[in-house]
Image 1 (cartoon, one colour):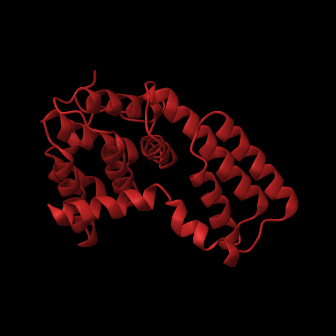
Image 2: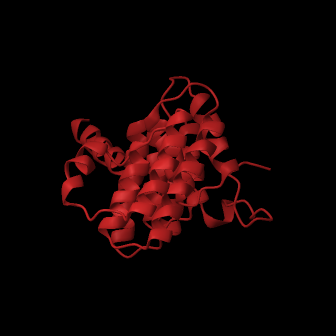
Length: 217
């Protein structure tokens, strides 16, 4: 159990862009030019005024500068994540924590559709034992980063929860799929096998190309 807790903490910290580590390196990071920095600060100020977490926005700007991204790309990434934070808040609706907002926004950035995110939130909140949405979305986003289609990853997480699974079950799924992919397996096949579904059980795509969660008409 302790190992799972450590894994959970590391993955969540990585996704949520912990400000402590980033802030400690600010002085060593290449600065943004003044015009770009001004626009970034306006985006951050707007997010703060709306009550949104600003640490990930600042971290993305610093990371873009460190990697030598163009000013246009930095602004696009920062502004895009600010938009997804607002979408995440609309999806979560009721009072929520910054980690939950950032986790949902991260999943949207990874390619999860808004309807799929809404469906997973509903399943999480219907669990007999309440849990935050952070871990389900972090696991789905991690799977997506490994090559699993984003909505399929959310579908599998949702299926685990529908079987009364808990956070440990989600980390177990994530670890098993990661091992299969590292061994050369196809990401979607690995997910289907480990989550108990097959490609034949996947619902047909919607008109926009996304797939609804299993069991959705």
